[in-house]
Length: 271
Image 1: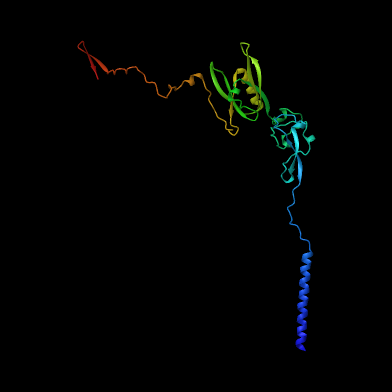
Image 2 (image 1 turned 180 degrees about the horizontal axis):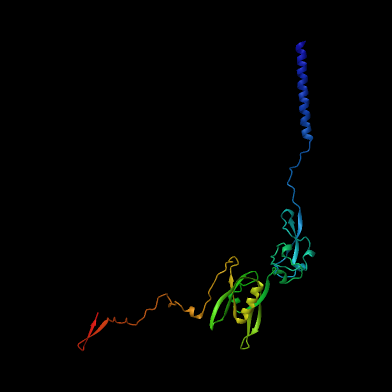
């Protein structure tokens, strides 16, 4: 009797376990399989960019710009979201095609060079006949040194009078020379301090102004003494670097002579 009771309890436990396992299996089968969670896409915003290369001082028109989608987590600071925000504004720096139009590159007022002049500085234009000899590489955004060729104490001298001047504009004009023939003249606009503006304008009346292009990363000021015509031929040698030897025969050696008089007799002694 006791064995039968134990067998019944065991059969009930096995049946209960089977029913529970079957129920769990059916629940897992009927449960919908969740999709693999994907990383949420970042939202985009509209950003105004340049439709073409725009130079400094340009007045932005509607066909100069366009709207593009830009990831919101990588949007630059100071961007514009609509075309009317920038149409009619002037640029204080160059903008490349597809570059965002940022507030830092927009003038507060009208377009032109004036908004691009830093506070306390001045823009001045000077004529330079030799600027185009740098193969046309003197362009807005480059830096130049100013060389003055004039008279000093009755002698012509060439001297670097100003260094590392930023160029903001280059134009070309046609003027007549002394013979009445037309000749091209380059007009370069540079940014200088008020004191340098006075110096540069005076230099244009004292001689010829020339421009020397320099590396914009080279900001070191070099002190020069200037060059005079007398110094151009110092230490010259013929082609090939061979020194010229004089064909003049060496001067004969002269002995020291002592003149002695004894009893009215003149005697010469050399040593």
